[in-house]
Image 1 (spheres, rainbow, N blue to C red):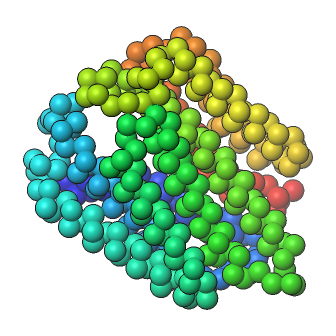
Image 2 (spheres, rainbow, N blue to C red):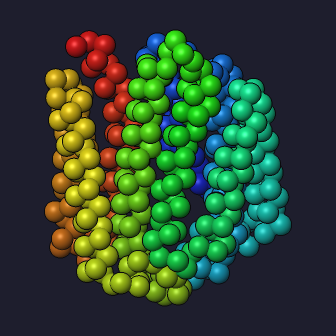
Length: 305
């Protein structure tokens, strides 16, 4: 169990679920040509999960002193797991993830795409070791990595199967994946900012520099509220232009995404304690999960319209 905690298995399960939902509840239901076989796509999922797991291990290694101060009873590296063992896990997971990426890049005859896996692994390492003290950039990297995971699907499963006969349809699917990547970027960024607000007191205790510790509670809440408004505007725009006649998809998004985000925006105004920000963080986690399955609901609505 300690090694599952080391790789932050909950986040990895969500990541794997996201990749599988986009493949089997969106791409295969869109009746388009796909570049990867089921086995190779599972390898893509494994590669992504391994690289992300390696990044989680590196964060535990770097955060040893911080964990000793904030959460000594649940500290892993340096307590129940040796630092040497943690480094071995990081190296092994990263090599497996990047290695599979090189293999898949050659399978689709796009060897240069392997650089994407190297980029992600490098960003995770830099984020854990060098970007912790740079406000907002650290949050942005986390959000960017989630977006890249979705873009990877488009690059490895859709783009290589595109030719002159299907480029219009494939372009539409590619565009939808990019739209989801952009939306996920802003949603994860919002969740990260709320997380900074939640951890403000602990971050001040250990000397971490975040937007909340640098600008203070009020200014950070204003910036966070701005992202809530931006995401709400994105959802309303998409509903008005693409989903207005798809009742099931429209109701799903209004109830599971728009409503909770409105709650976050309104609750954010008067929230000041860590407990209140924990509630907002959990609501945003719920929105993140429901937004993932919204693509399946949209496809189902289109098929039964």
